[in-house]
Length: 250
Image 1 (cartoon, rainbow, N blue to C red):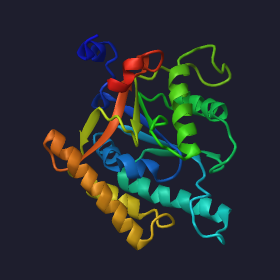
Image 2: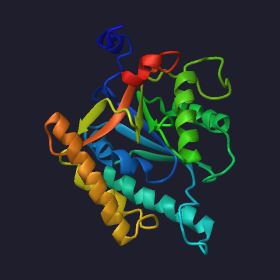
Image 3: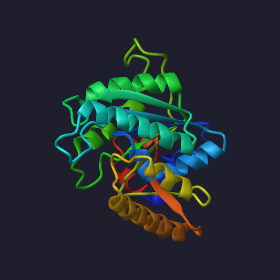
Image 4: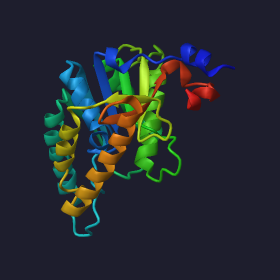
């Protein structure tokens, strides 16, 4: 079957045409790292951008003496500062315990309720199908958000939440299979500044390495589309989320 014909059948709703975009992330800082410049660009274009953070980030430390509750509160404050820089409209929190024993089903139920409240055109989350991904919060968040997108339009699914909503596209960051590259010239510097707000996660030397890595990636993707900096994601039509083996190639 011709891949171009498949792309037409399962064509995603263009990100640039969305009016409301919801980012679903496992921890405070994930979206900033992956697509912070894209968030800044979307916001500057007048789109409403929401962050939904699934866990409280309390395990994000190598210091055995850390007070986990205080770290969770610190990470929330850091994300608030970063989101202000990037122009995020609203931050939403599920507050599942970082590395906790919550299930995909529990997270999915809460994500569905947020989808039906916010009514986004596009939902973007971490890719749960990333090869070699070791973090359960990433796998569970990505799966919960993907299933929520698929089920949020079913009127018989979770009748107690708001009325059903139809999501037009789903996107994945931290993906091995990008198919969409966003020109973020003029916004990449804001991404780097937003990342600097996550001081509990990045000491000076590690921050420098992270910023160098992200800058080189953005330049590499920028060369693909003829700009200085670009960010990548996998964008799919929602109709590609069930029994479509070719979705990996779209």
